[in-house]
Structure formats: structure tokens, C-alpha cells
Image 1 (cartoon, rainbow, N blue to C red):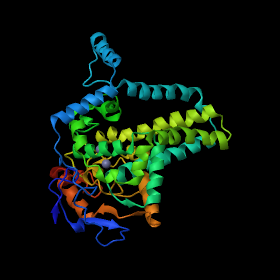
Image 2: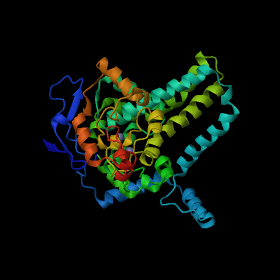
Image 3: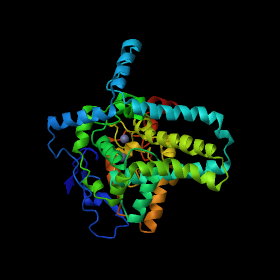
Image 4: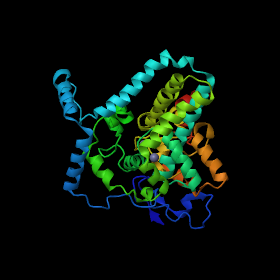
Length: 396
Ligand SMILES: [Zn+2]
Ligand SMILES: [Zn+2]
């Protein structure tokens, strides 16, 4: 029996072998590393980072992310508009993300109504594949190691992830591991204590907190870097992003569905892309602010059904922060609000996904009884207990 060592498991909860179920496991010892975090190795501060390393990194970071013009503009905004920011603004990202959203809103009302139904359905399909790549690939497989995947599935997941047009898989996994380890602190890349907007997209628009950069360098990423699929993705990141995020989604309706190219581009490269991004971001913002906390009332992540629907099952966030190594990312595997789990179960049936981890019912029960806010579906209905004795007597 081993005491769980990271913040990813409920503090004080002792995790024993019988607390973890591993399904579709070809080897009898498949659960050996289950207590050792979600990705096999301790991602704690195992390496020494000198202040010179950090200074070098920040200097390098500034050189690439900031321009003299950008800093002057930020100063002008502070002097003339009174708007001061906690950190330097990444103007390149402001222009790209802001421009993308603005163009989408304008073009949506101007053109997208003329798109054919088949293009909409294609956009829905591409959006679903992109979501699967993010949730089943970047999140549950590569970040949390909640299951194992054979090479064909890892390739599918990588291609699907590229449809989402997000950061490189390496950056995604590193940021998410920091997020879990240092939730709601300065080291958390999208610390929700800094408000909804910051947690949603603001964190991509300004320079990271130095604490986040420092901790990011300490996260063990050796397991991710050892995967040839990730190595391939890292090497051809930009080419893959252009191909899968923009070219394939917009060319298919044009070439095969008779859709004008400009409408296909607007529907898939703007609207579909912007929606996919925001659905992912909602997990960091809304699911860290709104909802109940049946598993651990002491943390900020909450259960949010609406976010779960749009993010294919990632909104059960109170549970997920308590049991990040559960391949379902939720206690119940209801497919209607967890589409990703449905597809993982399908891939498990054909053997491409295996060693699917989930906590035992007993461990979940112990946890929610100890730390939950009493809103779990199995909790007794509270108000019945609170009927005053007098009132009960009167009605007799
Ligand atoms: Zn979170
Ligand atoms: Zn996670």
C-alpha cells in the first residue's frame, strides 16, 4: 500500500491496489504504477533549476515574444487609457486570436447562412474528430496516461488533435500537467483565481507568470518525448497544423460536396475552428468556476453539465481533478454527456485502447463522503432532515 504523493489525488486518501480497476489489461501486473501519478513518473521538482537558467529562459522568451513596438504600445495604453496589465502582452497572439474571433463573428452573419447542410454536417464531423484528439489524445492519454493506446490509435489521435489547431502536443501536455499539479496558484498557466477571462483565453494573450515558466521546466516530459508519434508531431508541427486545421477541412466540401471554396473556408476554418477552441477553453474557465463539488469541496474545479456536452465529457471537472487518471474523466460513463468515453470503449473493444484505469466504487464513495459537498447523487436528500420537529408534530 502506498500513499499517493501528488496533488492529483485527494490529499489524505490512501490509494491501494484494490482501489484501482484496470480493464482490458493484457498483462497481470498492468496496475503496478498506478500509485505513481497518472503518467508513471513523479513530475515533482526533481531537477535543480538555477536562477541563471530562469533568467536565460525569460530573456530568450522576451526576445521572441516581445517587440519594442509592442512594449511601447502597452505603455501608451497604460498612460492614456489607464489599462495596466500584470504582464507583457503577447501582441502576436492578440492579433491572431482577436482577429480570428472578430472575423468569424462578422463573416458568420454575412456568409455562413448560405452554406449547405452537407458542409455543416462536415464541420460537425471535423469538430467532433478535433475534440476527440484533444480529449482522448492530448488530455486522457498523453497528459494523464489514463489508458494505453496501440500505434494505429495514437496516430489517429495525433491527426485528430491537429484538426483542433491548438499548441503543439508537447506544450499542451506540459501546461496541463502544471495545471493539475499547481491548480489555482501563480504556477497554474490558466489560474482561475485571476478571473473568467484570464482562465478562458487571457492566459494566451499575456506573458506567463515566472513561477509558471519555472515549474514548467521542472515537469517530467520524458514519457511524452519518448513516443515516436509525438516526435513526429513535434518535428512537423506547423505543416501538420496548416494541413489538418485549414486545408483538409476546407478543401473536402469544395472538392467533393460542391460547396464554393469561400463558404467552405468560412464554415470550417473560421466558425468550426473558433467553436472548437472555445469549447476547450470552457473547461479551464467555466468548469473551474460554476458547478457543484460532490467529490472535493475544497478545490475550485466543479461539475458542469453544459461544459461536458460541448467538450465531449470534460466538464465533470471536480471528479477529474480528484481522479485525473480515470480514463472516463467522470464517475459515470454516460455516453450522451461523455462522447469521448464512448469512442474509447469502442477502441477498447477492438484492443487498440487497453489498460483503461478507473477507481473502484469504494474509493469514490470514501472520497466523496470525506470531502464532498453533499451534492452527489447518492447523498441523502438533505431537506428532509431539516423539517422542524414542531411542524411535523402539527401536521399530525
Ligand atoms: Zn482543471
Ligand atoms: Zn486533466
